[in-house]
Length: 199
Length: 199
DNA sequence: GCCCAAAAGCTAAGATTATTAGCCTCAGCT
DNA sequence: AGCTGAGGCTAATAATCTTAGCTTTTGGGC
Image 1: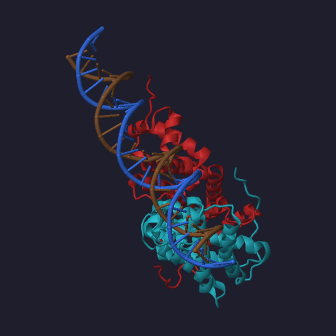
Image 2: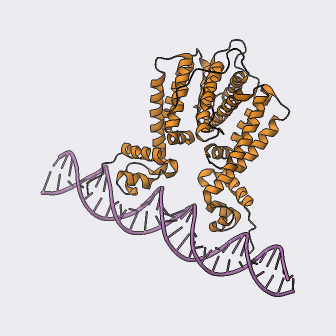
Image 3: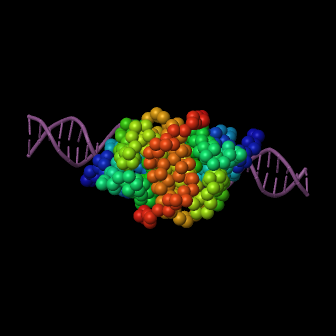
């Protein structure tokens, strides 16, 4: 019988197709094996089990997404760049809901994963710098920005917003609120009184 | 042999303990059966399989959480209520990371789940109304608020923020930014130009 | 107090899946 | 031509979910 000619990359490709088509629930080694035309144990020659496959898949998706969004903000600054960043992220989550769910839940203490994740954060950094932010304020602003957009798309996709009414308008509202919040405010300053600690 | 005296509630209690102790990965019917002292098939007399158990668990958690946060904002308004809402939500996610993960991923088109979810949204509504918002702007503000806080705690818990540095300060920044965004702005208004549609 | 129906257990069994172990074969290099 | 190792395969183990069908306890009605 001819060889299937697999490789880790090819395995991830197949896994990505299955994820897109059927979601994480049905992303199983058996399914990947069927799609690639081998028996499931053969996959272990390329990938160390299902958790590893999910990890590699998350890294692939993060990389692709960072690249897409990075391209979208090229040549833009300020509100323009922010809108592009937020909108492109939302488009990604809408077009590939299962990919978004996968990277949303992933929580690996793995250098490669952290690096891939950092690429996405770097894009957000660039956007925030376009608002004239730097230093500690930049850090906070980027975190706030990412929090808002990931939360929004998660709620949207998980049907957390009871009615589909005006979700686009809500997203526009969020973009405006975020832009207002990001603009450095020399008067009030971003500092607040001490926070109650969780725990 | 004496009966275990189970009930759907008791099964959910046990499931909640397991979730808290070991996370969703190990929330299995077998584990629940062991903990309640019955054989796994016996659980089907009280709960229709694992997906159903997860659904009920999510509903329980949403209800508890809505109640907690609802209590936390009693007697507060404006920024005070907003801080209490956001902080209490973050405390919940920090203290019960697995519960948070469970309700975060849940996406059931189920009336009971929607009702439980609505209780949490109602609390957010109350907070936003304390800012003098109503109508469509209220809707957008509440969505933005929920997006920001769920996104923040998700990123925090998933180690999405590279360093643990200053996360409290970032959260304070987010609260300020949100308060600024929520305050009705009669001049600029919250409306923006048409948004590119995702898809 | 007894009877009986239904609720709540149990065991057995089938289906999936992940994963390990050990074997076989093809491809390519010497 | 022969060897070696990567890439496949089959067999086997273990975990779990779930269904089917049996048994026992419980509690209400007579």
